[in-house]
Image (tube, rainbow over all chains, first blue to last red; front, side):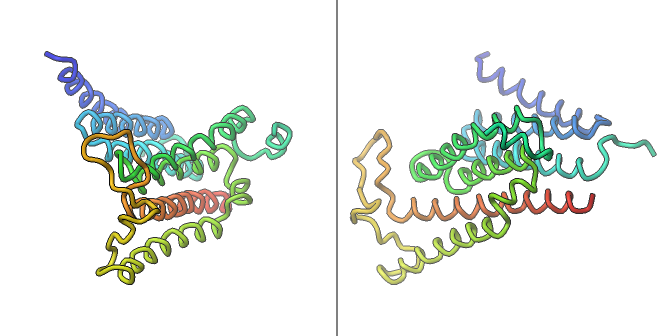
Amino acid sequence: MTMIEIIHIVLPVLLIASAIVAVLFKDLLASAISLAVMSLLLSLEFYILEAPDVAIAEAGIGACITTAIIIVAIKKTERMEVEE
Amino acid sequence: MSEKTNGNSEGLSPIVKVISGMIFPFIMIFSFYVIMHGHLTPGGGFQGGAIGASAIVMLIVAFGARHTEKRAGEEKLSLFESIGGTLFILVAILGFIMAATFMSNFLVGSAIFGEIPPFGSNPGILNTGGILPILNFAVGMKVIGGLSAVVLAMALVSKEDD
């Protein structure tokens, strides 16, 4: 098994794990950071699938601007998720 | 720079302000690099514009929306975006006038971006592509203006309601 095949298995597992963790967090700021990690891993996945164009766009939009918008929204509302 | 950034209480700590002010020009230069190599390497107007907009978003997060609005207000960003869109349409219509069709590549063979590269791989000759570098530049201006104006508007609205 070559190195790139191992990366092809490890990266999607980390991607799904960070997405699940983003749902499970009660602290919404930690959830936003987890979504940024998911976007960064997704851009890495795009890069090793030989789509560097999409990877640059995903790293700029997903990991930076979306996170900033979510953090501005958290500053406006509440940080912790409340139980019903 | 330090006494100026220590003045306003809005935003993050002085360390974050100074460091983000230092790396802001480098991010803008990288954005310009991605835009100008759009017809040669991966990337282009949208990708480079997203990198440049993320630099302005970094300033909004670090210095606060009020402080950023004094330097780069929404009207300036809207003007920047409109100049980009108008440049794109003007170059496209110029192709209608100078050559046969809308957006035809009339600059091929001329002195500006008109060089025809030799066959095979080359180290990246920038003076090629005809109207494509100009269109990439116009799209980059539009994306920088539009995306940073969206985030700035959202940050300003959330400040006003507090």
